[in-house]
Amino acid sequence: MRVEPQQLKAFLLDAGLIKEDQFEEAYKKAKKTNQKIGDILISQNLVSQEKLIRLEAYILGVPFVDLEKEKISPEILRIIPEPIARSHNIVAFRKKGKNLEVAMLDPEDLKTIEFIRKKANLKIMPRLTTPKSIKNVLTQYQESLEAEFGEIIKKEAGGIKKLPDEEVVEEKQELEKQAQELPIIRIVDTLLKHAILQRASDIHIEPMEKEVLVRYRIDGILRDAMTLPIITKSGIVARIKVLSNLKLDEHRLPQDGRFKIESEDYKYSVRVSILPVFNGEKAVMRLLPEKARGYSLETLGLWEETLERVQEAIRKPVGMILVTGPTGCGKTTTLYSMMEILNTPGVNISTVEDPIEYRMPKINQTQVNPKIGLTFASGLRSLLRQDPDIIMVGEIRDEETASLSINAALTGHLVLSTLHTNSAAGTIPRLIDMKVEPFLLSSTLNLILAQRLVRRLCGEKEKYKMKKDELKNLAKYCGLKRIEEVLREEKILKGKKGLKDVEFYRPKASKESPDGYKGRIGIYEVLRISESIKTLINKGATSDEIQIRAQKEGMRSMIEDGFIKAAQGITSIEEVLRVIIE
Image (cartoon, rainbow, N blue to C red):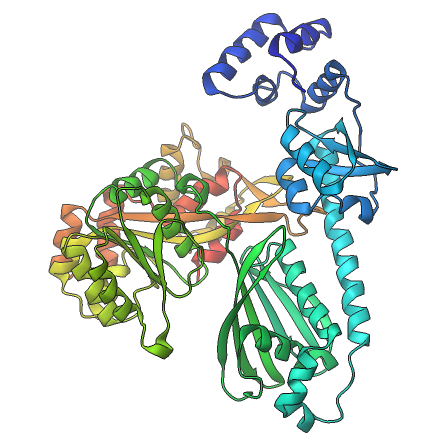
C-alpha cells in the first residue's frame, strides 16, 4: 500500500491544500534528502499531519480511525507486544471473530502486518490513524500492566505460608523450599518482567520494618514501584540467591552473582548484589540487555566539533582514549559505540571488563574474576600476548592497570578505557596520583571525554524565559558571559540579545511520562591533547590550568554543552544543573 507522489499531488491540489510550486519544491527536497514527500510537507508546515493521513487513507481506500479518546480492552491491546507497538507505531484496537483491526501511521509497513498476522494467527485489517491516537493507546499499555502486576503480586503474596519463627528461616533447607514455592517464583518473575517493560536499569528490593519496598531506576532516577507484604521478604531474597547460585544460608556478608532471563521479546543478563542491612538483606538487580547494540555517537549526543574531535582520535592507530565520569553516566555505552565504529575485519579487538555489559560480535571479551586471580591487570597482561590492535579496559582502578594501559598504548596499540573523575582535565592529576609519569601521559593520551546523562524532555514542553533572579542564581554555578558566547556560536543568540531573551523549556506532565521526561542523552566535554596541553602535563600543571588552556583552544565544558541542548528543547536547565552540580 503506497501513495505515489503524483497521486498525492493531484489530490492535494484538488483539495486546495497546497500550490503546485510548493509541492514541486518539497518534492525536489525529498528526492535530494532521500525522505518521504509527506514528511517534507509536514516539516515545512504546508499540510498538517492529520489532514495528510486522512488524505492518504482516502487515496488508498483504507478506513481512517480516531482513537484519541478510545479505551481499548487489555486482552486486545496485548495481542501486539508493547515493544513492537512502540517501535512501529501500530496498535490493535478491535477484534471480531478471526478479524483483528489495527491502527497504524505507515501504510507501507507490510512486514509488521505480516509479523502480527503470523504471531496472532488472525486476519489483519489495517486502518490509518494519527500520532495522537497512537500515543493515547500506548499509554494504556502502562495502565493495564500496572493493574495486571498489582493483581498478580496481591494474589501470590496471599498464597505464601508464614514460617513459624525466624530461626526456621535461617535454615538452608527451609530457604530452598521457600525459594521454590510457586507464589515466590511468580512474584520475582513479575518484578523482572515489569521492570523490563518499564525500561528500568536497576531493581532495588529493600526490606523495611513492616513491608518490602521495590524501587526501579528509570532514566537514572529511582522511583517507587510497589510495596510487598513483609512475609515475602526472606522468600524473594532466597529466590534471587537460587537464581544467582549464591549461598542461601549466608546472611552476614555481601554476595554478588548473576543470572540470565529470556523470552521471545527480550534477553537480559541480570547482575545481582545482596547486602546485609538493618531489617534483613537488600537485593539490587542490574538489568543488562544482551541484544543491545552500540549506539551511534550522534545518537548519544556528540555533535559537530565534539564529534569531529572524537572521530579524529579513534582514527589514530595508537594511543589512549579515556572516558570519564561517575558511576552510571554512560561511559561503557560510549566505549561500545566507539568499538562499533572500530570493529572492522582488519583489526583484532580484545577487551577485559567487569561485567561484560553487551555482547559484541567479532570482539574478544574477557570477564574479570578476582576470585580466581583474573583481575584487570592480569587480564590485560594476557591480552597483550593475543596480538590485539585495539584494547578496551573496562576501568582503570589501580596503579598496575594504569601502568599496563599506558605501556600498551606506547607499544603500538589503541587503548580505550574509563576512569572515575568529575571533569576531563581532572583525569590527568588522577593518573599522576596513580604513579604514571607525566612524560608518559603526554606521549600516549589522544583524547579525554568527560560526560553526564541528562533526561530528555518528552511530549509537550512549557516555554519560558529566565527572570533576573533566576539568572542571578545561575551565575553561582557558571559564567553567564561564556554561556552567551557559546549560544552565539551556535546561532541560538543573535545580535545584542542576551541570555534573558533565550527560550528554554520545562517538562510538562502527561499520561505517558508523569514527570515530562523520557530517555536520556549525553552532555560532554572533549579534551584534545594538543601540543600546548602536553607541555602543561609535563610541567605538572593543575587541572584548572589545563581546563583554562583547553577552553581557549575551543573545548566546551559539559555545562555549556548542556545549555545548548536546553536551548534546543532537548532537555531542561534543571536537568543540566542536577547532573553537574555535585
